[in-house]
Length: 462
Image 1 (cartoon, rainbow, N blue to C red):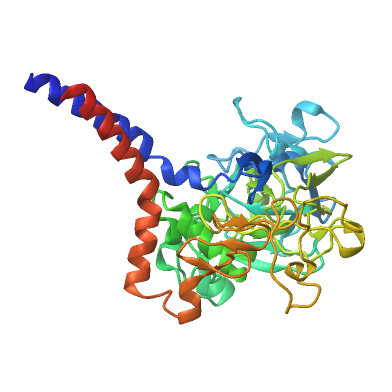
Image 2: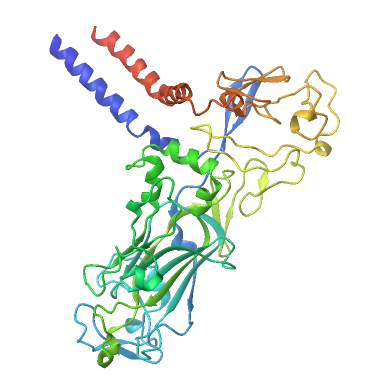
């Protein structure tokens, strides 16, 4: 009898653990923009923040090289094999497919051996610098969700800068510097992401970690997105609620992971020694076999789908929004200023839907239905009564609309639409009691699940 009870409790614990373990990961999906719910007034739409799934963004980019004739093979030339820099009988010939190394080979499938790769011309014009800019453009704002990974088939460069643009390549900002000697190359002390913290996560650093020169087993360079996420979400990225909360409230942090273009500036090839071997300049070149960029279309939390049509990415906007990034309200839905969706409160967020303009509402029909007071749309006399409506103006954060007159808010929220934390009014949001209450609320789904399972188990076992 006791054994059966033990086995039942053990099975219960395994079930609870399997359900609770990934729960924080589910918080970060935001994969539904609206769902139908049943209320006393009938079936209505419940709107929530939403975003596209993360995907391989290299499928949608355009690549540009500067100088444009920097790719090897025109005219044909020989170069030295990696791993044996004095065996210089390899040929690059743009007119022969088997010997060509065009830029698109940086983004093809790498499941075969040997790897395919783009390759630059060799450093035959030394001492003139051998420098290449590789620009990746999406013609769309994207949000990075995973590490940027660059795999070299030559040695990793002695000097390199990764840059980003937020305005389609008109201006550029450094993302990270890479060098064998940061102080000499960029007048910066060497650091790694591990040296950063929540307060310095936006710092632009120079790292020597990925510039070890001409070594066959050292091909990869990273720009660490996930390590920066981990400062807020924990080392296993399980506390996504914390990360999304920071992204929601800190524009600079959100912009840090947002790009329209990336630029890889190759400034000096892998030399491997102090001096350049001028007798064997065919040893020095750049070759990249793979570039990985994972992210999602930025749709301002107003869409779950981003379509690629006519070589262009566009959000399929919900919440009565429109534009490539869902960045404005649709015509006749400008009853209040456009606003991006919000990740908060977890797990549904706030949709911040665009609502009908005054002119589009027209005259109320002759019926018993109470139409919303336009003052609640923030465009009319604020002294009139505040009115909610499940179709035109939706109560937030779990609030319910009472007789189309006002939102009945949960204890922790206040405001016309229950859009504000009550503690904000008293300035106590940072207090220990508030933190404890928030922690308890975050744990509620798990505790309720555990209680339900325990109740079921007790009825079965005892």
